[in-house]
Figure (spheres, rainbow, N blue to C red):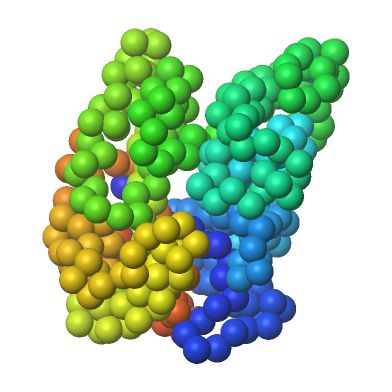
Length: 339
């Protein structure tokens, strides 16, 4: 299992709001530290909100690529429905050249919808936009000269797309939530699957992951081609008790705020305790507890190939996040490898 981190480039830590310059500097420092600590991957999300600095993830990843040696660098996720696939490919191919073949993409429709009005797209076209643009992005990845036509973008007639990525085939994962059709789509296309699970019991996603694998099998892909990743909120501290004490206040504040925006009730301590329990979704604890939980999650989903912590939006300080990265590299990854 590869283990890494996803970030939304948050500028909000605890009771303090960092300047955007300081927050970006600290984010790049964490990516460099994750590289040195032996983490496999670092992902940058895409949002268009005041509290996040990740509206242009490829730019952040390019800066990180110039400062790192081994860690893979990915989006988490690129909102493909509101993006031009030609530009997406060009941007990430450029990151791949800077990174000498370490770039990836996770593409999705976006659970946050602020990009749709910002770029002039109709939410009624939510799925149709994604389906068409994914088709074009995959075609660009396969062919230097592209002929294509669709509904939402001007046609291409034998147009070359440059630069080409350093990797022969730029990795493109499909980011999914809980929609069965999305799991089937990823399997049918043989794309790696990144499942975002942010609440409830992780095991409840097993039928959906099985749908992915069954669709991939029907489409003629071998089991080893059907890669499954899991993205969930999490945090590692020196002990279980310290991790929970550090994480809960910011978690409650964040999800209560999100609830006001999306019509959810406020977070309670009982809900949090259920989420950090052995079968709950939050991967929060000391190294031993976290490693055990990752192995349980993998077993519950029939085996996962990658796990990414969404870690920097719970009011944690830069120093706490750096310590967590060190613990993941030095203590969590070796435990998970041992099984």
